[in-house]
Image 1 (tube, rainbow, N blue to C red):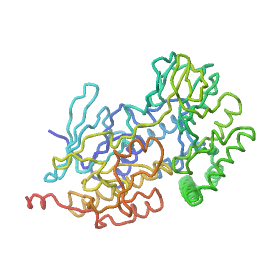
Image 2 (cartoon, helix red, strand yellow):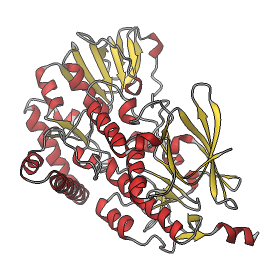
Image 3 (cartoon, rainbow, N blue to C red):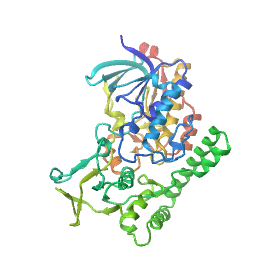
Length: 491
């Protein structure tokens, strides 16, 4: 007999655990389970184990609104974040709803039955299990867990040292006293370089082009003061809103005055590294602020590592690998015992599962995103997708709340199906993410589109989404509701 749930949540990471808490608190009486492909809670924060892994957002916004972040550090390390997620799961009882080692491979919607049939591979033997559910909530992030992005480097087979991708960090990599080259200039590279520099001989960050970098204190003094003088939940809420509004302000400032903001960001780096450092070459990007995500370095750790002589930055391109390092296009050679390819993620929508609606396979690249979480003409399915210009959890939490509103609305009105309906021929089309980052551009043709106006436009603005998702109408004219028996009668 196939087991049935009102809601199936896929993924037991930051988003999936949050979804479970929302369902327990807001959809009382509804049955649900959380399917997790791996054998542990935590998602990204359990998978990634590279040195120094940490958040690149403050924990007052990356944390859940219902569970205050109590650690002293606002910019937290990976193990602390993982403990926080696990603690939340246990505290709210979501851990009891998780089915581990169950990887979703297919989901098929039947309009007459008013439900999804999902096919799961269980364990290493890949035993096939089927479930049914009324609503499918995908909380699996936006990248391929099985592989990261690795460019084709010429001559890499000739390299005699160790080659490592951060997504699959070996347990016992000894880099003490070694020459290390980290390829990349994103958040992962910015994290790895100062951490590895503590023990390595020299760590070189090799980048094709510079990235915007901002230093921020690891501790939030205002948060510490508020927690000292106010009740814990009130202090947490105030700091959360302070940081939300602050991030919106700086983002809008950067978009309105890109030249001035760019000059200001570069000057901050110049002040940190001193007048003799070549900031123009190594820390002055060719693009405007927030065309790509700005990298955060806590307590200037990257700059301190550079000033100490334990780390450096080389801006160049790779010609080919040699036995003892990397030959650059400029003619210079970087000696290396270890090369870390912090070259990015491979984006993948909904873990690459096959989705069918009434026997027709869905091509999500031809669909439009509804409120940044559902897909045109696809019923009873939502994805949790965070912000690019703010903390991931802010949007995910709003999405969880909205899914609960949908589920409750259908139950209250005797409806079985909710489907955002779009005329795909008339909607104005633009990319789902307006970002120039390599990982976004590589996946551009595989991602859904967005329109020019709500509810098909992804605004990347917490306040606008809060108003629309928490207080806006569920039955907004675009979302169409129907009853299963009405569909049967029509047949």
